[in-house]
Length: 403
Image (tube, rainbow, N blue to C red; front, side, top):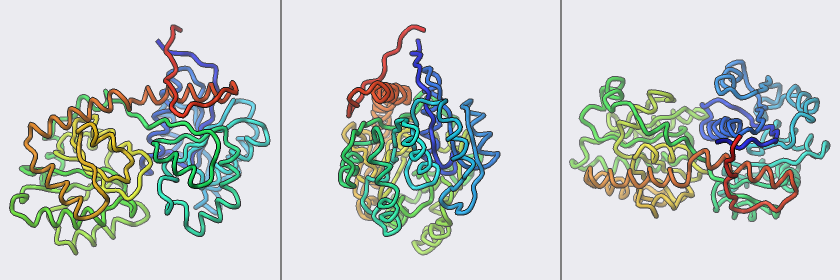
């Protein structure tokens, strides 16, 4: 039974490819589900023919426009022109992040056409340093603050992000709708041996899996020295750390240097970007998942690994204390010694104990972080915006009714 809602929403984001990790993955997933529940969703973005094919594969109406100088701002006058001409075809806009031209021009058009818009900041305001550089302070002063203050609502992914909004000076309505995933997608995983066939070095090893971008804010400069500390002991000679994820702005070369300088050659594997079957095979093969970030919005990767029944080691900057509270893993500060201690703690846990943690993590995601729940919460928020009702901080999922 699906609720059919007469709402037309234009989702605007800077890119849709999975190579950019969390934001496009989460946004495309929620877009598919909103369509499933009867919301008329369209995607507006910049990119290439390959990006257009991605949206075609998702069966989401997508409008992908080329970039012009300055490309770093994702500037595209064609996107702005098309949005202006199509503004009568949607009731509200849902904007993702704030730093790029597509978001700037969408907010500007919405104000002129008196269309409400919702902004999902995707963790930008969880840590002051993420928006407090001179360049970003200038951008906020000239453009960003006006976008934020004129929004009908800001969507937070975690309670910590609400505090970040207030600290940044936003005083308007806020709603908390965490990311969600399709739990069933991770219920049946490939045999662990499938990963070993692709990567023979995994045979006979206990595997710790990092699955995220190779980027400075992900804490790899703390994880790799911590791993060197752990594997310096003979007890952990059979352990290997697998780093799966795309290179971000050339940071892979820094990671490779860290591996060498920490004496970790042969103890760490870099797989590059993984997706589809290979990604699920590596998740299936792993014993422990780790995310050592200095800052996160709300990680899809954590949810996926929990849904797959993997015990996790994350940092407090991941803004997910529920994981440790549920007994699904360990949460530590993003520091070398704390990470090393956490890794040893999980690796020293019996297979039965790890399975119990994994089962608790799977239950946590099933109960609270399913993507269908997130989509229905957004429908509640959309309805409140369009009907002029008070926007709840913690919205209830829109009910399912007969067609």
